[in-house]
Image (cartoon, rainbow, N blue to C red):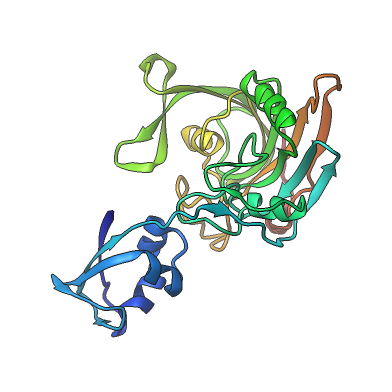
Length: 317
């Protein structure tokens, strides 16, 4: 059982509690998908100002809501007919250009609509146990788009996992960041630890701190446009949120990053400008390394078009 509380802010109309909760950012952060149907399945108990409430109860500004909820874990992952942008496929692997907003594999708050659900349908597979992540050998954050390689059978899954474990993989990203890096190119080496004040965030600290996991990112500034920069980034380690934390660490948070960045006045509607552009890996023990490249996303092109127009003389490094 999990519990969270929230207060109805000033300016909200008097409305049903289920409508208010379905539109709440706090609820989405706590429970994931917050549509009314799902909320009715996972919420066990609700209190409004200390009194028991129903889903039809009304709330008004200033009301305090306490919610007890319990995640319903499905027994199986079910195939779903979700379109995939497939870059390459053979009998052993499928390389996908993952769209922004798609979760890699089912987890709390995201039991459907994931890459695994889509792959099961594409591979014409039946459902699998929810404790399995068939074919997933590495992952991308929900809002990071780009290349992800998946395995169609267990031997290939084991082989690809070993490549990532031994760091025998080249991964390259592109990002649009706010600010300019301290140098045109460089290597960022830090320790990464969870933020004690927010378990969904990570903090970078100097190597000498001795706390957390070692993380290394190589960066190159391709061009700068006023207070924005286009970056090429290569991962030497694969820590959660590594690039996002490292860009913030050098004073260049990624444009559109809701966790580590600030709202941009120039691009207020920007989503996370981070894209897995290039992947080089041996897909079997006997194969030579293969290079896969994903096209630049439309959201990048739209932002860069504005920057090119606004700053006709970009500083190219």
